[in-house]
Image (cartoon, rainbow, N blue to C red; front, side):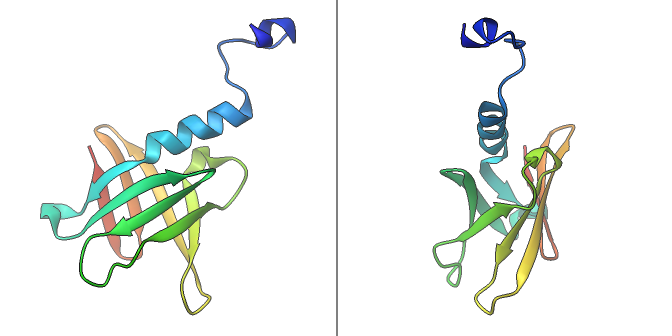
Length: 108
């Protein structure tokens, strides 16, 4: 209703809601080929968090969007030594892939 009053297209969400929708689309359980490595991507406010299974996984890492437009799926995380690591999400025919370091994790 508000979009109509403002003269905007009600079918096209505002950048705020489009961003939230995209973040929600990327959340879920991801795993590598044959389940060797597993990760959970969750939303934490306006950023994502990725947490890996295993004894040395810790509480997870914050994934910060590289640009305001998160449609390209590019994020980064800051490692304990201060290094930035790129994390990329790509939509596939059967879900999403998450590229983290040398890992390709898939969510179907």
